[in-house]
Every structure is written in structure tokens, then in C-alpha cells.
Length: 197
Image 1: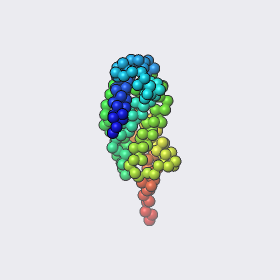
Image 2: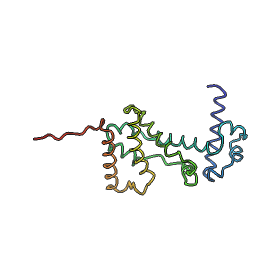
Image 3: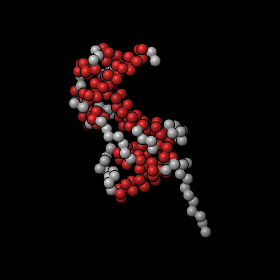
Image 4: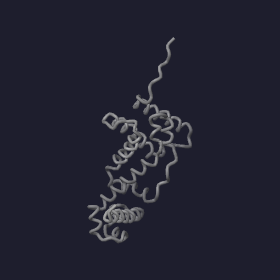
């Protein structure tokens, strides 16, 4: 790797570290380039070499968070073999506790500036599913995955709906969502025919 590449990596890391420290203390629209660059120990010109404004930096940090969130699950291969196990792991499995800066990124006063984040998060999950190698990326499969993932992500962002301590809630959710998966991906879940007398 060239020295300039290493400098860019270090500079962007310093910018993002400073941003993460500031986002915990104040909303993104109140963070100034001046305070960020002072904290990152760089000058404003260096910041502007990498980002046109604070919102572009925020978008990049959110996109990295989406990629990291999608990468945290190892359940993707189960989507094609054991729908119920996949749903249990995806919706009810242990996930790393978000850090203070990650929680701050998604606060309403910040997320209103990230109108593309739901699509970025969806794209990160779709990419992780396609990476399993069982589905060919195409329009039909994109529609199927968008439908399934939007539903599951919608449940995840409404924790009151998913009560992991209520066995009836867990069982209903697993059964309902796994049925949707099996109907959307019939090539992996062929219907068993009932033998006639």
C-alpha cells in the first residue's frame, strides 16, 4: 500500500473517531467542521479533501454501520435451508449491544438527515444474502428480498412487537415469517405433496 493511501486511511479514521465522539454529545446538524477538525487534529482543508460537508461524513458513517450490522449475522445460509432457524436467529438471536455512538447515529434528531439510510441498510442485508451464493442477483430476487427484509427489519425497529420473553409471540413470529420465506423462495422449499389414497 502506498504511503498516500495509508495517510488517507489514518486521516479518515481520525475524522470518523472525532465525529463519533461528537455525535454522542450533540445532533449532527450542530457539529461544526471547526470543532471536528480540532478534535481530529487536522485542518479544515484536509477535511474538505475527503468530505464536502458534515452530512456526507454522517452518510458514510451510517453506511459503514449498516454494513457492520449486516455482517454481524451468520444466519444467512439458513435462509435457504431452515427458514424457522433463520428467523429465530435473525429476529431473536443475540446481537452485539450497540455502542453509544451507534445509538446516537439513529436518534430521531439525527436520522432525519439520513433519508437514504433504510435503503442503505436494506442493500447491506441483501448483499450479505447474495454473498451466500444461492440466489442470483436479479430483479425478481431483489423484489423477494426487499419484501422479506423490509418486513423483518420493520419488526426489529419496533421492539414492542417482538417480545422474546413471550414464547407465544416468538412462535407466532417464527411461524409467520418462515412461511413467508418459504412462499417467496419455493425453489428452496418445495411443497410436500400429500399422498392420495
